[in-house]
Amino acid sequence: MSLSRAETSNSDAPLRSWADAHAASLDLELEGPLDAPGMDPTWILRMSGPRVEAEVHLFYGPHVDISVVLTQHPEDGMFVSGEDGITGQWLTEMLDGLEQMSREDAMPTWLRRPSGP
Image (cartoon, rainbow, N blue to C red; front, top):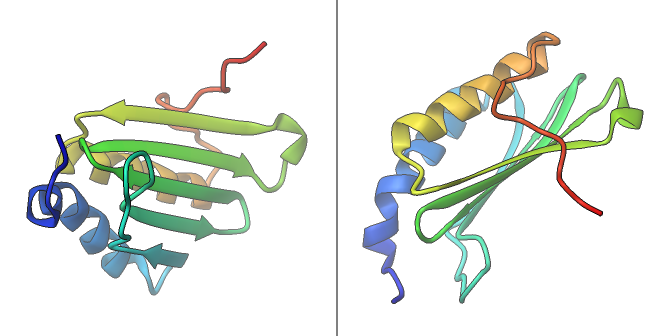
């Protein structure tokens, strides 16, 4: 089953709204809506700061994948998070957590190291 743009607007509206509200205080790049077949993201938000480099990928579902690198400690590697059925409120809280990370060292509890071999 594929979702129309109207059906995904409930999840991308908070992303767009958050980016608009924080564009003056953060280095942000927002791409979307993307013509996303299958498993490709419908929106991408990139955040760059003195402490954090982050990418937020929003997919149909709605699903969100977030990847973060601590720019002052790149040796720590990448931290990630993903959520199925993301609500607008939870997405906004996650974005607020990234913004707080960009200002201080506190890492949100929902970020983790990727699992792998």
